[in-house]
Length: 135
Image (cartoon, rainbow, N blue to C red; front, side):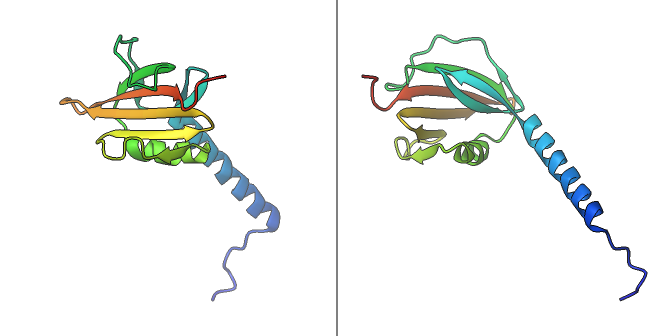
């Protein structure tokens, strides 16, 4: 190899590494918003917009709180990645159901349901419940 190859000094490498880290953190922070549902902080994909509260009957066991969003984003992969990083564990409550994913953390259960619209957007419904009622 040529002796004229550019070599970065240690301080330059550290500076470059820190710059890359800051860019990645900034991109990740911009990727999501959060919703407080029944006292539980739930990440929301960035391309989703909250819809006005709708009066629908929640799924049994998920009566603590609910919120509805609509937008264009990949729901399934987003929640698999983000909730796993926040120590939520997927469970099999709705394993046979299409477009429903349930997660548990402590005694809280989160139900993520999503359905596509003809216009290419997706309706995202998040419901929170308690696995065990408070004593």
